Length: 149
Image 1 (cartoon, rainbow, N blue to C red):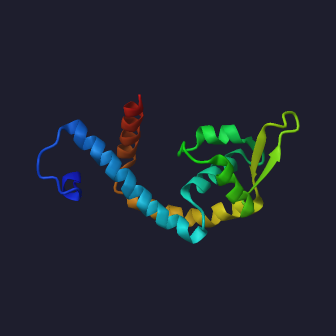
Image 2: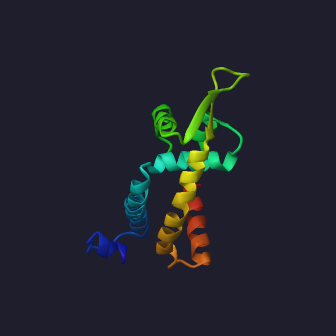
């Protein structure tokens, strides 16, 4: 569906205005669809992102500051976010023995198991993006990189 149809825009838009509106609309479309995927697993997209980052560094622990630096959502309250993941047994938190002010995070076996359970659901959901060819996906990614400068 064209963005003009989705937002019921009848007047022509400037190309840049159209692209920016389309970007915001598509972001929300994607986030709404994604939110439904997380519900059965009782975690949020931000919690999933932390687990994904820690899995990539597993079996090593990772400083909280490094995790926050690479989060897709730059605004979460990391303390509260990590508290919830610790309570669910999905990550563990410890202090760096060389620097007691530095908190280290590590994914637990339960966290790894949860990510494994989520993988088939996410692969199925990714099929919604199969209407883009690999070349189109690469072009889209390149354009978004260019937009961010």
